[in-house]
Image 1: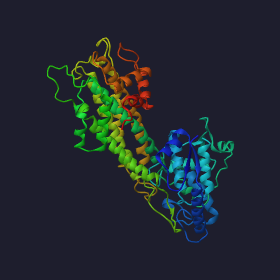
Image 2: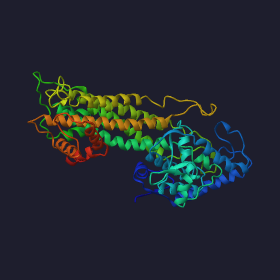
Image 3: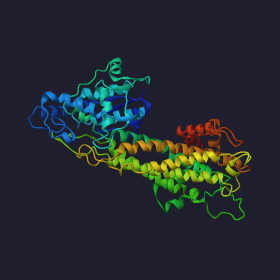
Image 4: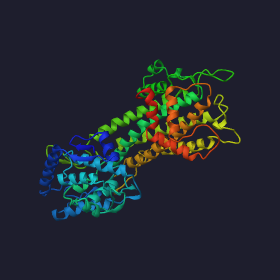
Length: 512
């Protein structure tokens, strides 16, 4: 099994995906263990002094003015975990929790948190044992970090609360730790706070969304090309010289992808109207501009994620010169903004895909295709209601595009009077990505049927490869009405698992 070694300088997006989704093992580097020990020595020295230090010998948040005596500090650290593990609602996905724990471990290993090496090792042991704390949907405002979600993870380290075992069964965390020979941690000064104070949940969801969207944007380029073929559109608008004079990188990449898929097609540029079209509708002609803008949004979001993956997010932090300083680096605004931005871009990509689908089904705009791509229109309804489903998904995505990060709400007796809502932005983005996958799947279903109905004209080799692959995957072609939901589910799986991109790339080579 692949092993990810965590050092002091952060981790990569591929590391996060390996641990969260592929179950990769985690190890601490010697450098990380040394940095942990050095930072802990600083915390121990400060804890021995009479002067109050935030997070070491004081309360938290609005209660930071109280000095805590040495005999109560262990209790203080336990209490912050227990009291902050206040999430409610349904459980979040296993991959999200694993990303959350791994990214907290990344910051702990930076040597800026003051956590003991044995606590970090326990975090790695829990991940390697396949133990997943029960984390709930609601409880993070995205400032002072993802407090409740991280607290539920820290509770598991203490052997308290509930967790899911590697067999998928939820049981008391203490039992699961004992079965795997993991001793619960007894937290000392600063450690409870250090386990809770980060942007790890929202960052983990950002990294996974970017990975999914990378595949989806290529998929959308492919389905847009298929729709162009089905509508007998022109590929002249995809010429590189046209996109070079408006040099947005994403636009150029999307146009190049569509052109690669359409290479060798006999369907492009044919017109069945009495008056040949001078140009195609916006949803066809401007596909690279819309998908390209989304790609450039992803590039910015990826830059933010890379910076955050290299960061040590905690409060207070241990500095190399021995100071322990309070700061505001836990604020999730940088991550929250791009999470919201991605949801906006995803909604618009879904919207233009739905418009192409509707055009394929409308006999007045499809340039010779049967109404709703039906076998016997009137007796058969064809794909009429598949487009209804697609429209419902797009409508929800527009609602999900409303930014969470613009909706700060004060907390902690006005000490935490401005928050990022980044966790909420991440949660709705996950739903948006799921819905975008379904929207692209419906366009794929309609476009492949439309291309097959253009008898006598040969589609591009890449299009033919996609059609053959999707039919082998259980998505049926033209014919009389049938139970449609299984076909749509199969198309969804075909897109979601990357089979659509793989089928096209088998002919085109790697798409951009």
